Amino acid sequence: MNKLRLLLGDQLNSNHSWFSKVDENVIYCLFEMRQETDYVTHHIQKIAGFFAAMRNFGDDLQKANHNVIYYKINDVKNKQHLTQNLLQLFTENSIQKFEYQEPDEYRLDKQLSDFCKEISIESEVFSTEHFYTERKDLGTFFKGKKQFLMENFYREMRKKHQVLMVNNQPEGGIWNYDKSNRKKWHQEILIPPQKNFDNDVTEIVKELEIASVKSIGKINSTYFEYPINRKQSLAQLDYFCSNLLVHFGDYQDAMHTDNIFLFHSKLSFAMNTKMISPKEIVEKVLETYREKWDEIDISQVEGFIRQIIGWREYMRGMYWMLMPQYKEENFLENQHKLPDFFWTGKTKMNCLKNAIHNSLDNGYAHHIQRLMITGNFALLTQIHPDKIDAWYLGIYVDAIEWVQLPNTRGMSQFADGGKIATKPYVSSGSYIQKMSNYCDSCTYNYKEKTTKNACPFNSLYWNFLDEKREKLNSNFRMKMMYSVLDKMPKSELQKIQEKATHIINHLDEY
Image (cartoon, rainbow, N blue to C red; front, side, top):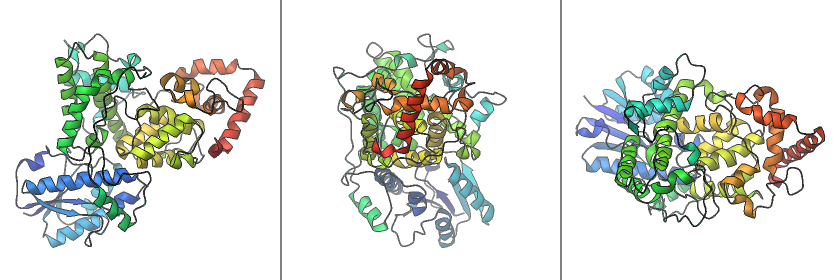
């Protein structure tokens, strides 16, 4: 029986059981398609990185004697559409059975499930064998509950997989060291040089130009610095554990003009393409911690592991529990458009300028830059969540909808009304000053609200609370801020509202 097995661009798991033996009757197929490059405008590094990783994976499969059909973006046989390519291969290769792994994006999952209902040959779906959890696990865990608290799920994951546990109790005595993970980085704490990979993507960039694929951001066409194969992914993990883990937890929320990555691992692209698994990352981090327990505090380790077995698995579970309706959520009824500077970085607000330029130049920003700089500003200026989703999904090399959408629409924009986050993640300029050096060299003063040089975040923050009072006033986590707002003199609030309205109406002047 001739089988065709589809591999999507984020299914590059060389340890998958599919590859445990060579079968001459099995053909693997990978496609670079306009269907995938065009459904949103992506960062040029994201497209080049995915194609480079896919080509490496296809080559590795062929070297291992597997049968592989690979369509590059400009191949004459490439119909640029997933199911059309599949139908072509069915005919050309007398395929009798079609197999694929569960797509992690709802869009592709529906496309393939609908396709399999229409074709006449047998089909079968397999697990990607990547995550700790299955798609529906979170729905089962939260069944009958009114709140979907990540912390509850995270603790259950720790217990189930015996991660940082002693006699079924959290190692160190507490579950979560988040309060220890909020330090501002100072330059006397030296950061080792980042590990970069000089992956030559010149050919891919030229092919994208020939194909007229629209993209955003910048790329050094001679190299892509993130891992594009399993060997590089493991090297990146080793480097993180040996050099960066020791301070990761302390400074995971910090931001600085002089350093883009600080102590972050740069593993998200490798992990989201499945070149490396969350389990082996966690095991390596724990192994390093056991070996260097006198050097590495548990707070550094727990802060990292929480992102992997807690937040990442939680986001995937929430995505599959809430889709497809989740993509339409707009609880706060925000309607504004993104300012042009989200695409150029041309703004006088130093925090936004740095975070956006990092994104455009590197296809990267860490979670606090995404949440409390770009996301915070978008929420305070009441941008429509569709516009924010498209920007986040396109601009980051690690962005795949299953992880991007719940982080953006839920955590960042509170568009789901509190299914993921228990309160909107908004702040004035004081938080940005606390966690970064952005304010030190900014045109605006983080201490002022309504003057000409006042930090825009300040008036926007209080105006947001006032405008969204009806939606948020009953939220128990917002009561303190509303009590402060209620004590504000009406004359001061009016000035704040006028300032905020001017900012919102003239975003690209700030």
